[in-house]
Figure 1 (cartoon, rainbow, N blue to C red):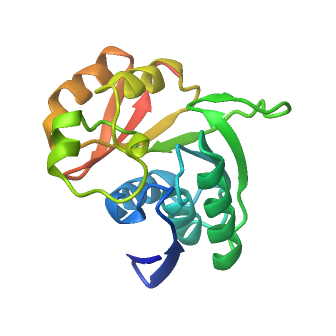
Figure 2 (figure 1 turned 90 degrees about the horizontal axis):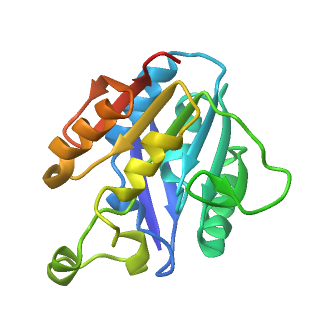
Length: 196
């Protein structure tokens, strides 16, 4: 299947299958918030939990000067992300990782920015919604993955998506763990690390 991502002056076609999180559920707003935060700089960016690669590759299409890394816990997601990078002619270093902990040897990278859309749906939402792809891509332990990300991310800028039902707690958690909100839309948030 294909999904067309519309960005200013660009339309990008993303391939995905039923074993990968649907790119239709990632917001172009997250890419635009990250693009505003990049401001033309040549920085390193990690798309953590990249799925099909829509966030990282969308950002790379707007900001080709960035050095892009993408990681996911799913080997199939990595295969699809690599396929999308090749089809779009966008280079990214793509590797297996559980959130911020690489499972493969030799990946001791540091990043200037991390972008993420992590699973936060509960079982009640899963029962009501018709979501495409593996349940593990949507069903999460509330904000526990974001709490880990906010606590462990070693970067200056963090750009994340968060569904409306969690946003108050999400923003409080970010602030508690030393992140200051600098950019936002309805579902996407850009933070800088205080005292970094």
